[in-house]
Every structure is written in C-alpha cells, then in structure tokens.
Image 1: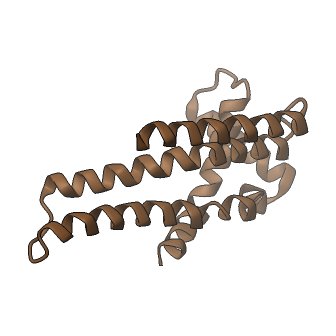
Image 2: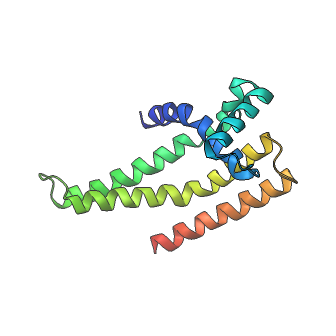
Length: 156
C-alpha cells in the first residue's frame, strides 16, 4: 500500500520536480520566480509536449518501492522492539519520535545517491550536462559510497 500511495504522490509532484531541477540548473533571467516557473514550464511543454513534464518518470518511479520499504521496515522494526518491552501499552511520544527519526535517517542515507542520479538523468533529458556518461558513472560510484559510509557510521 505504501508503494501505491508513494507512486500516486509522485505522479502529482514529478512535474514540479522537473521544473525545480530545470530552474536550479539554468541561469534564470531577472523576471522573478513566478515568471521563471511559467517560462520554464512553457519551455518544457513546447519542446516535449505536456507529457514532457513526466519525462523520465518510469526510472524515477523505480526508486519509490525501495524508499518506502526502507522507511516502513525501519519504523516498524523499532516500534516492534519498543512494544516487546511493554506489549499492552501504547508507545510513548519519545519512542514514536525515535522510530520515525530513525526511519527517516535510514531512508535518506540510502536514497540520497539515488536522488543524485535522478537529478543527473533529468539534466541529461534536457541537455544540461556536458559529459553525461562519465559524470553519471562518477556520481553513482561516489554517491553510493557516501551513502554506505554514512550508514556504517550511523549504525556504529
């Protein structure tokens, strides 16, 4: 169920993410934020059609299942640990916060490299990257190594 809700939310938010990436990667003329958003959206639609706002969506959608799986597995694992200590009571607010925070940290450590790759791919789709294959390979290796290193440091 988490994957379905994650994908549903992503369908709505993905065009905003594409526009955000374009705005961050390009030199924005001094026409104000709203004008830049409208200009960027119009540019994407005129070059790729309305569905250009979802260009690259299938690859990005593949990251939703692991992301939600990580979040719920860690959250449920910590909640189960606390419930084993007092099975007939509710979790305290502190225990709920610890479970949610740990789940969020685990999700970020593992998905940040994926996000970096996703942004690079979005830049590739709109021709914003100079040497795409080399940059993407370096980002995958460096991002994955950084994510694993952070996870190991967190677990200790």
